[in-house]
Amino acid sequence: MTPIEGQPILTAAQMRAAEDRAIADGASVESLMDRAGAGVAEAVRRLAAGSPVLVLCGPGNNGGDGYVAARVLRQNGVEVRVGALGEPKTEAASAARAAWAGAVERFPDAPLEQHDISPVVVEAVFGTGLSRPLDDDVARTINALVQCARLSVAVDLPSGVDTDTGAELNPLSLPHYSLTLALGALKPAHVLQPAASVCGAVRLLDIGLGLDHIGSPRENVSADQVIARPPLFALQAADHKYSRGMVVVIGGAMPGAAALAVQSAMRAGAGYGLLFAEPGTAMPHAVVQRDWSPQALTAAIAGKPKVGIVIGPGLGRDDAAVAKLDAAIASERPIVIDGDALHLLEERHFAIFRHRATIVDRDRRVFLTPHAGEFKALFGAWTGSKIAAARAAARHSGATVVFKGPDTVIAHPNGHTNVALAGSPWLSTAGTGDVLAGILGATLFSAPFGAAEAAVWMHAEAARRLGGAFIADDLARELSAVRASR
Ligand SMILES: NC(=O)C1=CN([C@@H]2O[C@H](COP(=O)(O)OP(=O)(O)OC[C@H]3O[C@@H](n4cnc5c(N)ncnc54)[C@H](OP(=O)(O)O)[C@@H]3O)[C@@H](O)[C@H]2O)[C@@H](O)CC1
Ligand SMILES: Nc1ncnc2c1ncn2[C@@H]1O[C@H](COP(=O)(O)OP(=O)(O)O)[C@@H](O)[C@H]1O
Ligand SMILES: [K+]
Image (cartoon, rainbow, N blue to C red; front, side, top):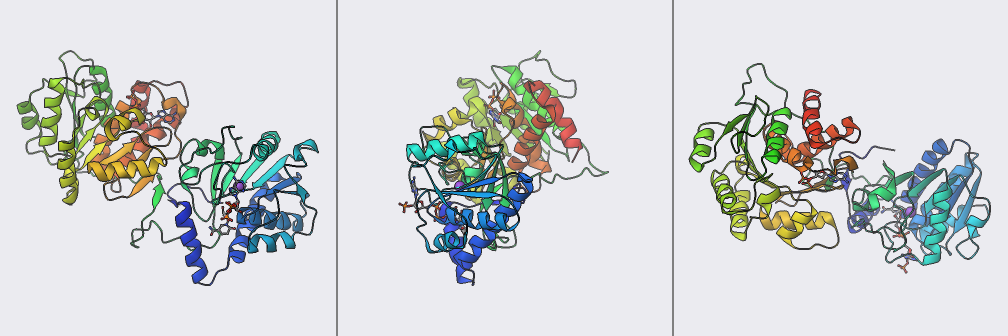
């Protein structure tokens, strides 16, 4: 069982292609299934700690994994019952069923939950092959058994979630599992909501698909990935405030939001924080404040090697805001566009960003950080996979799109996409997005592999350290400890 940070994410079609490649290289479906089932059995045996186990098997290869797991558990002295939803429909699953020497109970026609409820349930009913909603009686049976179990383990995926979008296919809400064992690779449903919440803890089981090369920079094979703890540049003895990076926040109508952003940038490691805001905005003394004019911006950043601009938090949406946004984009410095500024973007801006994306120039990058409402306003309503929606938005806009929420997706204009693990729901409080925009201003210069990924990770880590019931100001302050720990 491997933790999932940094691991590739494959769609159902990509999984099938990986399986085909493994088979072309000499593996067989049976050998992959044996390895999957044995891995599930080993994990369940340890966690069950002597309790009896009920394994629920479906008609496809997910069910096949279940039969193998049941056999291996029994070989290891665990008391096992098997409940099956019909007969196996694939060769490999039929072979696994035949190798299971015990009884097979049927469900949902003979409802299993009416016998003794099992303390441990292994659910191998459907995996990546689920093609439509579960029948109501099947959903109800699985629901009841999983809810009553002390430990519930979903094999590959919880039955009832769409592999590629993470949507729940049934109107009846799904039970929450203790653990989901992703076979071979993660799928989008393991990280996208609402499925990710249904999965509980997610661990990866290697089943010998030989996917180690995916996501490796050495190979020209790219996959979506889960964000891992990022490396950040260590400070050097010779560092000075400008070598660490200057973050310029351009504020407006609601000064508090811009103030949160600039403080966050400094606490996340920027050497210099400059705020254009109304005079009198309360601010730590370390932050330099200036009155706005395009000339003042040009003068402030002239000759500075590392400047990142953050615009949007509290900006307002009036003509003055449009002029500020145009000046900020015209500076050709890396720019984080958040909040109100996202509502001011037009196709002409995207044309500029797309042009910049064709120039391999780290210093002109553009980042958009929409939440769901801002995303919809910018790119229109989206359906299906949040990963696919973010990828299309990044390609269209020429910017790196940080599509925020409990399952934040980061999509780059080149198509590469990364997903954050579910962050603390306590982040759902006003101002935390301003904090993220500020952090991203700082990581533009301190994160060697992905400023947005590092910023999202630091944001989540600050929230994790705080526990709960914090406000955005606390989150900004906690960043000092997060940055110092790197
Ligand atoms: N990738 C790999 O390398 C490896 C993958 N492995 C495992 O295989 C799993 C994928 O297996 P799979 O393709 O057989 O699909 P699976 O999820 O078992 O279900 C398909 C069956 O269910 C049926 N069906 C669908 N929806 C239904 C519904 N609502 N209600 C009722 N029936 C429904 C569907 O019927 P049909 O749609 O054709 O009518 C079909 O019969 C994968 O998750 C992993 O666990 C490992 O064994 C080895 C290596
Ligand atoms: N339920 C949640 N779970 C995890 N993270 C969340 C949740 N709700 C919001 N967040 C995070 O909190 C931040 C909120 O940003 P945003 O909506 O822009 O807030 P604001 O505009 O008030 O600053 C984003 O980084 C988002 O990913
Ligand atoms: K399953």
